[in-house]
Image 1: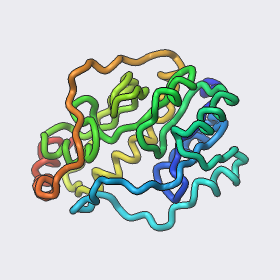
Image 2: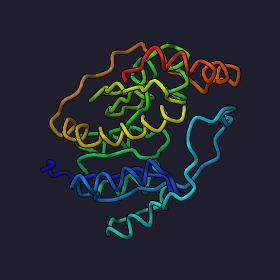
Image 3: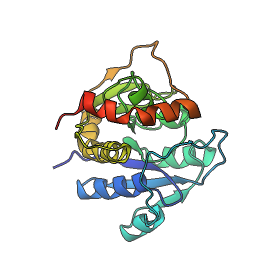
Amino acid sequence: MPQTASIVVFAYNFPHKKTYDMLLRLLVEGYTVTHVLAADPVKLSIPPSSVRTKIRHPATVHPSAVARRFGIPYSVVPHNAPEAEELLCSLAPDLGIITGARILKAHIIRRFSRGIINFHPGLIPEARGLDALLWSILGDIPPGVTAHLIDEQIDAGTILIRQPMEVHEDDSIFDLSERLHDLQLEMLRPAIEAALAGEGTPLAPGSVYNRKMPPEQEAQALAKVPEYVRRFKTR
């Protein structure tokens, strides 16, 4: 049985596969989701990718429908807003789970007695930041997922689990991306249990944060996928 904990989920207020899958996985694993804080979409200054690395999922259910079906309180609120902090003060949650969020500020993070877990689709610190899979391919970094308790930095904080991902000899970029997604779901329970047990290793300072990959490097990474798969295949 999972440890008892008050869990708040940070989500996007629009159909989003990671939010949908993680909410269902939390419920299947027997955890109680105390509240979902869902943020509306915001316009970003980051340009769109010039290559596609993920399968399109047009039929994903809106997270509010999941919350309604299972009786989970659902608030549409900017994650760093004063009203979000006020709500968290009243809830006094143990743990936060990020299924969809921008950078959370310190005044939000400190409202959780055990911290907030993020699941990053790359090995930290080698593949911190945006476009983790593409930077991993270009930098010959093994694919994997890192579960970590966040701090005010990007993809930093306390490392709970670093899990390399299996690679098959006929993998495409879409296979790699989907398996990274599935691995995050598999790591949900052990990461929560590690956080509640007070485990983890603080990330040493000095690692590099990757920004959005430029289009010319995106094309190079995509062209390198067959070589990358041959190098890191496990099956």
